[in-house]
Length: 153
Length: 126
Image (cartoon, rainbow over all chains, first blue to last red):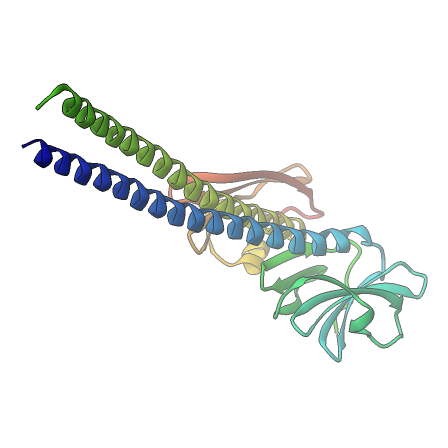
């Protein structure tokens, strides 16, 4: 009788330990997946905010007569943000990266020397209305009213 | 059943209850984290939509111009635009040489973001 009770107690002890272990592992996996999802969401939000806000802020920063224009380049549309000195910040997409370089307006684009703003396969710049630019990237669209006017081919 | 056995079972029962409580608490925290993450993504999208709508207002001289830029439907002085799970409503209220606009972004019936703007226009149209 005593041996039987001990056997039941050992079984219950092992069962409880196994239950604890199983629940611990399930919680660990569930928690890791939740954390991964939250971190990914944060990363996506930051990337979207950073890229779109940077584009609109850069345009507003040089919103002066004749400084904002769009050109067709060998890599697609190029957003040209000049300062009247013959040099300009040029923003364009090459090899899945959104790039920015400051150089002479007439100089050829050199993606190897440019700074990377983020990753995007899409970079479209259009003018849906007078003095307005709509820029589309993988992170979404941004609409900017250029008060001084914009030259679009 | 002697005292030792009873104590063991009581202890096991107590531990199981504690485990169940911990599972409930942790699952609640994980669920809240996912909900907050979804809310943050929605807020980012809402802010972007509202800012674009504000720029459209700045570019326009009438609500029809705003509609041409953003799309959506106009009813009275309000433009309504559906964008995925979010809906944007934009009012156009001319007053003197200014146009006041309240931009709201909704998720179902819940207001996610509000942006108030005013722009000066040369010829205010209704």
